[in-house]
Amino acid sequence: MDLLDAANDEAGRAETERLPQADLYRRQAAEKIWGFVVSEVNRRLREAGYPVESGPASHEARRKWLRELDRVLGTDLVPRHDAYADLHGSCFYEARCPPPEVLRYMLEGARPFVESVITALREVRRRGARAS
Amino acid sequence: MVLVRHKATGEVLEVFDVAYDDYVFAGPPGEPAKGRMVHRRDLDPDPFEAVLVEGLTPWHDR
Image (cartoon, rainbow over all chains, first blue to last red; front, side, top):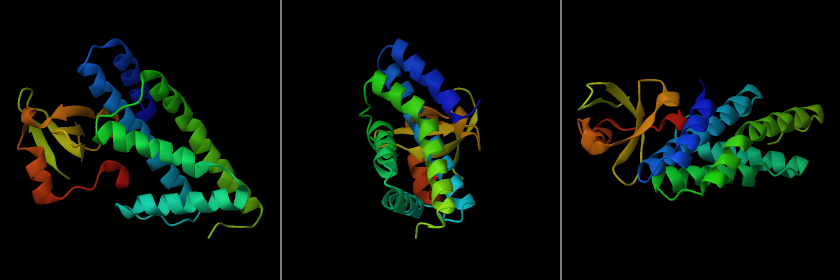
């Protein structure tokens, strides 16, 4: 079971459990969705030769490269990434979670978002215009 | 790596990240997919104090 599979189970339990347990499941799911996005995007960027060091600086580096991909390709990777970052910051850290349907929408959008990053990396490579 | 023990079950858990309201995201060492929200009062030693002593890089930043 990977992170998104686990998050899917927990998002489902958040929809059926009562408070306060429902909130804890929602936060658990949020943390796993964010962790999936971060680890997958970092991995894809590193594989493509874009340095993303570990530690707190990884957020800045990841966002920088996504911003460059957006600039070169006209994509919307940064706002999509930031929605996941907000899910982490607000829901996990501060217990201010979105409604269940929004969490579900973001859960289902996590793999497509990573696929969009992969597509952008391929496209920028095809054009010979590595983001810098 | 910050390791704590669940007081009720004796399970050894890794602290993956800490939230602002006395909850931590913790689970079997190295397995964040099995992580869960646990209140600090249920863990020994206090995970917030352990993090201050040992330092913590949240799992998704590694």
